[in-house]
Length: 293
Image 1 (cartoon, rainbow, N blue to C red):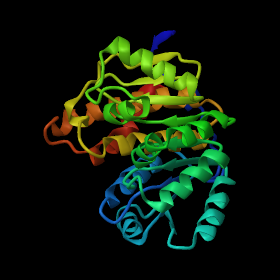
Image 2 (image 1 turned 90 degrees about the horizontal axis):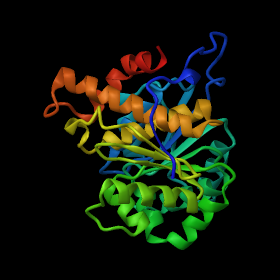
Image 3 (image 1 turned 30 degrees about the horizontal axis):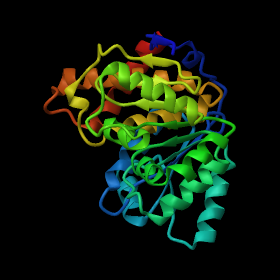
Image 4 (image 1 turned 180 degrees about the vertical axis):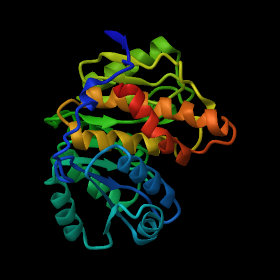
């Protein structure tokens, strides 16, 4: 199992095409939110909008779309209240668009729309990020969903926190030490043909070959230990994958670096007690400048 630090700089983010247009930079499709967790979709979509991708679409129920409409006028809105056949038709239209798809933030694992989207996306979406409710749904039916993961041509990106990964990998709920965690994360990525971002105070990115890239903990920040921080990270990964889907490992490493750095900048302004997840994307502009410069 090879290990390395996540780089400080990412050359692939430099040289943005001044002649590009909104379709040049891909579409991030955010399948997220529910009646009582509308904010997850707002946070994920807002983060994707700050990533540089050309379009951000939110596919969700009406109350979530109302929240997105009020907070993110730049996002496209697609209501999901249709038959299963209509939902599949719409999803396949999204998957046929150059870009990336995020499924799960703010969605209960037993949401029938989540299950339809998860099944279809694992089969047909080129660039795919799975978070929150999608991970819990997978953990409840490992044989089926892990089989779909392994069959994918391009690796999906999974973004579990400690508890979610424990369910996915069958580990103790309270986690393990660093060496045990690295081993488990590496083996999971290898056996399931995926890239895994393990979220804790020292985030790790595991490539599908089992290589581990870690942040080093220099941006460890208790202000990120609040519900919604992961939604911001998932949206950022999705937005960058929409643009750079051919290099998913580097996208995931850059996303962790930018998210952690922006969190540290937010803590510098608001303090670790008072900062909230929606503050993180406010500092993406400076974080991007630092990782590109």
